[in-house]
Length: 412
Image (tube, rainbow, N blue to C red):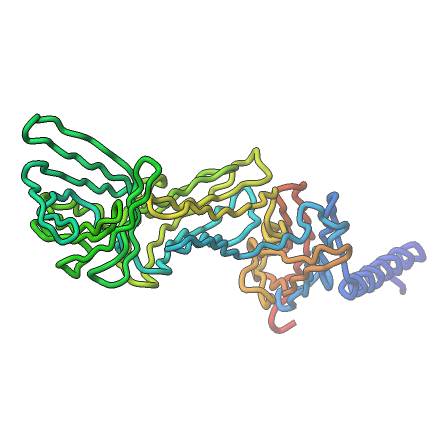
């Protein structure tokens, strides 16, 4: 006796067929790759899994791919150079060194300004003349003269002017005369002095009783010259010490300024008129460091170092700095993150799966790829694999692939 009628047979056959079809459909699904995609105006993001149905013991392989869709004009190659600008005068070299000559609004440019001695400071060879002298003795054609009746003082100034004061002790009247002088040394104790007064020049042979760069108090300077066909000899005695400051190297000053930005983090309290005092040795050096901070409303800036001093020629070292919106390829700020629910992400080809820096050549179709495996958890029937790509200039891209997890016993 049959327990199945024709209708029952049809139902059983249908159930069997549905079961067979469902199993076949599941098997086919397990074999098929699945890719989801999203894009903005600059990038395409693809997330591919080997399948989206698995069991608790079968990992799913995945690949996340970022593709550039067009050339990024904001990330055109910008070449920056480390530069040293140098200028020299008779005693120093001024160097302005910058870490790069191209920057963006967010990247300071480090710099150093240094002064290097290239020649020694030497006391001027005419320094022996400078000072106040009193006529001590005088002869005309070897005949001694009475200088006490007409005491005479000479004062030789550092600007190569001089004055002569002659006093008549009988009348009490003093006569003031002035002119210019120059001196050329022939040895440590002798040379040629030229006195210019009222359009006339007197050439005086000079000898000193001291070898140093200046004559001490009460020291002597001996003259011999001719006037109106007569040979005149005079001995002058120094009656006042010369100002020692005249024989010390004048101070030199360094100033640093900027345009198109500010200067920050410098190693001096002030950036203007920094006193530069260097040992009197060739190669001795003084350095100031800091950073140029660009200002956003400018597309060009500059750094200027200036060296000035009373005894040197002023020099300037200037560097221009180009200021761009973005200095480096902005893909360095593009980030890709992979995460999961209902399982873990393992075996990936990068160190971390969150905030992965994306490096793309600035060419259409250039690709960045991350791969790994989704490992299902034992207590989940559903999972998700997620990919997020962000570049602050464009819309964020998010992808999500649901994953069905068949709970499978170890004995199955």
